[in-house]
Amino acid sequence: MIERAVAHIDLGAIERNCGRIRAELRGKTKLCVVVKANAYGHGDTWCAKAALAGGADWLAVATTAEAVELRRHGIEPPLLVMGALTFEDARAALEAPADVVAWEPEFAEALAAAADSAGVTGRVHIKLDSGMGRLGTKDPEQALAVADIVAEAEHLELVGLMTHFATADAQGDDYFPHQLRAFTDFVGRFRARYPAVIVHAANSPGTFRDASSHFDMVRCGVAVYGLDPFQEDAQARGLVPALSLHSFVGAVRHFGQGESAGYGRSWAAERPTYVATIPIGYGDGWRRAFTNNADVLIGGRRYPLVGTVSMDNITVDLGPDTDVQPGDEAILIGGDGGERITAEELAGRIDTINYEITCGLSPRVRRHWSSP
Ligand SMILES: Cc1ncc(COP(=O)(O)O)c(C=O)c1O
Image (tube, rainbow, N blue to C red; front, top):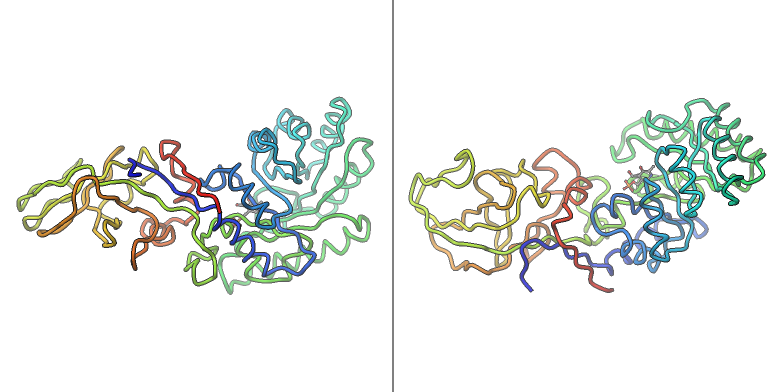
């Protein structure tokens, strides 16, 4: 069925991508699939279920609301809320139930109190900031002190030790090995005191880049969705892009030389031509930066987006001879025949990353999930 703006999500691809990631891991290493931000725009509940069918052991999100939503849909495996939390959100996460991350003594004390009063056992991971410069403590002594608070609290359980890499995707850089060394040194000390803890660090690029970053579990998001962790070609890495974005040709009109399309007249026909209007725009997350800077597939051929992207429409130059008709399907992300437009291509055009292309698709884009 042709629709105005629909993202098709291939759940079989999500399953297979989990298998592809698993092939990088030693037998005992666990796979935690990151489904935050509505599974990078792909639909969190559906993707979580597909990932679990594909061999994921754990799930991770950024916020308590995301964790509560997954539990509401009956998703039971271990679930980690990775983000910074207010005390209220932390308490709600423990009740969800979901694991939380701590690195400040005061926060650990508050978790202990919340777990006592809620009558739950709060599961806690300690975060060392080994160089990301965002969340976690930079001080190894503090990480150990917070772990001690958690371990001694009656209703808290010390579950994990984690860090996050800043440059795993910058292949060949020397900061990633530096972070990995710093964290590995600390893991030795931490494990001497708490041997049962689950140690995790690698995101998707770390997972593909260096097996010594895997520890007990990897936390993969982008690769699960078939997006390339290094902004290269996901398919060449054996990953299958799960999302394709479709619209349709709403109108085809003839333009004389000099006639312009869209706001600001950023494009005008240099020769007589046909222009298609496709009813998708920045209100759908189709970024305004694609103005005169993207291609669209219609009938298996690439056509250039011309004119300014508006909230609800884009325009495409079909050339002077065309058999494109109103009602034809238009593919903005995905393949048709031998041609394909990837999130990596689009990201490269507007100086962003594939993550932002799929995360940015707005709720106005209907999601359609196909079973494996
Ligand atoms: C703490 C943390 N771990 C893991 C991930 C997953 O990263 P990726 O999507 O690169 O696999 C993220 C996502 O940004 C994250 O914030």
